[in-house]
Length: 233
Ligand SMILES: NC(=O)c1ccc[n+]([C@@H]2O[C@H](COP(=O)([O-])OP(=O)(O)OC[C@H]3O[C@@H](n4cnc5c(N)ncnc54)[C@H](OP(=O)(O)O)[C@@H]3O)[C@@H](O)[C@H]2O)c1
Image 1 (tube, rainbow, N blue to C red):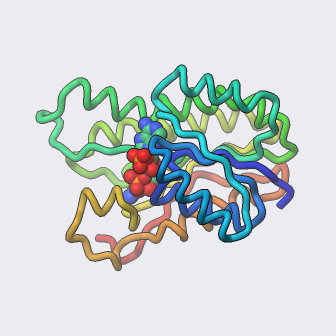
Image 2: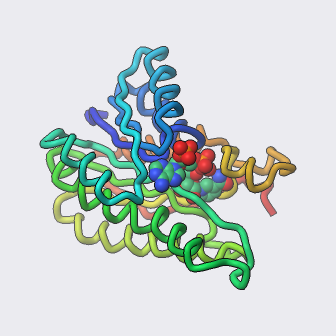
Image 3: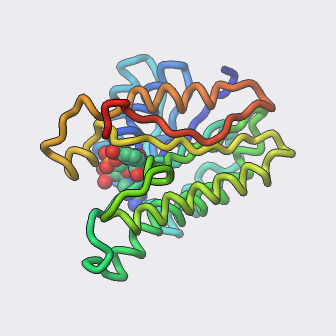
């Protein structure tokens, strides 16, 4: 892989952390974006222990001004990969949700990837083999109750991914969504503390798939795909 720099959101824990470590092991400089600076610094130290390089950008991806400042801080730096991984979910019957919860879920899972991607497009255009990879969810393929807001956001992200992929195809910038099933991360542990972990996808497996897609040769891309444990019913 010739790529040199990756921006990964939600890099402080879970899937985003695993993606950052996978990239770092391949010698890619990781720009770690997330809400909690201490978590990002912990991942930066893990990367340093591997002999890799990373930088920390603590920001809330739903904060438009912070995202604009981040873009400004990068200036004309080339970005080879953007992984929109930061996400949040809400498990509740629709009738038990409020407007603020709906807005939050749409902002973090859909609006934020849109705005960050738009902000970093000039940087991605400087790469000779750029990838934009959005982390979706199995809910885009298999419908489930109590996640209507989250599903709306992730299905919206799927549509955004497909349209942008068509838009950037002439420039050979690949845009792909990878949609994991239930994964062994802090998000899942909080939502389903008693779950049998054998039915979960390891974040390292998701990270391997992200790395594989980002390693495709220039001009080659793939369709969106799901990634889930066959033990999941
Ligand atoms: N876990 C699953 O079962 C599962 C299944 C399918 C898809 N996914 C998707 O996979 C992605 C990663 O999830 P995960 O399981 O790794 O979750 P996680 O363990 O909760 O990690 C999410 C990370 O995103 C960060 N984040 C959340 N909101 C943010 C914001 N507004 N601004 C900046 N950073 C923010 C969090 O930062 P802080 O730690 O600082 O809060 C956290 O580090 C998400 O898009 C999720 O929807 C997860």
